[in-house]
Image (tube, rainbow, N blue to C red; front, side):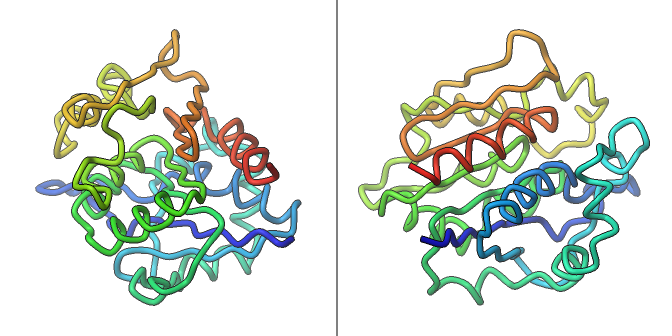
Amino acid sequence: MAINILFIVTNVDKYANSTLATGLWLSELTHIYDQGVQNGWTMTIASPKGGNVPLDPESLKPLILDKVSKKYIDDRVFMDALENSRAITDVMDTTFDAVYLAGGHATMYDFPDDENLQEIVRNHYESGRKVGAICHGVGGLLNVRLSNGEYLIAGREITGFDWFEETLARRKKYVPFNLEEAIKDRGAHLKKALIPMTSNVVVDGNLITGQNPFSSTAMAEVMASELKK
């Protein structure tokens, strides 16, 4: 049976009150997209507003840009999908086997309070379908409430970009909130890698989260494995 997956990405290209550029962290999408290509998934890329998806320039630096991401930067089909992403409102009535929130600091601005994103995540989660989020994309889960009014991540084991990693990334003074603190405030159990900026993926039922960009490969592999079950 063919897998149908929705990737949700950001439209934001700057930190608020700053000229510093941000956007989608490329590897957090390319690795799972590559799994989709290998496994014949049907894939849709959507964003809160639709249209162009900016790329975080930090994710394109030579020491960061890995082989998989390089391949897709030169893939016209992939880049066209990023330049012409679907609006979330266009896919509200479509049922997917999985919803995946890709990261990048930019998502801290347009993911947490997007009610359409919240509805998509809630509906898919409550129907037993897979919900994945990586790095700052985990911020898109913060305000999702279940039908009973409880926060989706309350009492769940998840991970996400922690505050010490924010220090290492030199972005503490730019980000709009402390993601680690926000996750804990929602009653979730944050599971960190023993060593910052190393791969860490946490699976709790049909909720799958990755800690940072260095989790991109493992996150893609775990999502693929879970979707095959």
